[in-house]
Structures are given as structure tokens and as C-alpha cells.
Image 1 (cartoon, rainbow, N blue to C red):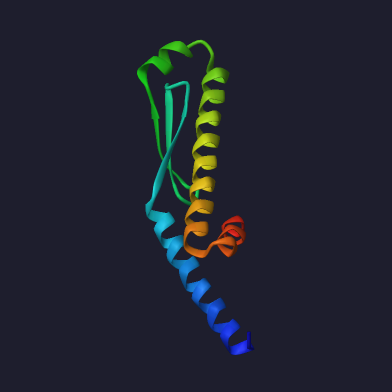
Image 2: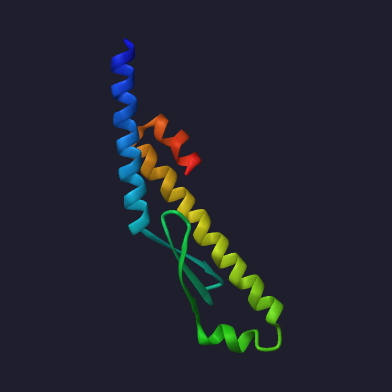
Length: 105
């Protein structure tokens, strides 16, 4: 493979990666904890919304640390799902190169 062709392929891959990044900005995932807390994040892991069920407030009214733990679990779940989505989308567009790029973003 000559250098020009390799450069063109790299530019094509870069363009596809940028398109995936734009799509991930608009895609969402939902993380949860015990069905009491939900956290919505975009495909980059940016938290967009947090929802507490009324039962969560009742169950943890005397245990704020427990509620904080629940929130952390839901946030981590949403971020893990966003990471999985990012890797999947990159791999879908770019194959093996996408998996490497997905780890960078």
C-alpha cells in the first residue's frame, strides 16, 4: 500500500470517527440503581438527567449516605453503558480501528 492511499484511508477513518462522535452526542443511555434512581447520559457519558422515585426518598430519608451510594451506582451504570455504546458505534463504523479509537474518546 502506498503512502497516498494510506493517508486517504486515515482521513476517511478520521471523518467517520468524527461522525460517530457527533451521533454519540445525541444518543442516550439510562443507568439505574435498584429501580429507585435513574440517570440519563449521552453517548459520551455526560449526565443529562437524574430521576429519583418517591420511594427512594422514603426508603432513605434517615440514611442520606445510602441514597448517595444509590446515586453513585446509577451514575456509574450510565457511564459504563455510554462507554459500551461508544465502543460499539466506533467498531460498527471502523472495525478494529474503531475499537482503538473508541478507547481514546
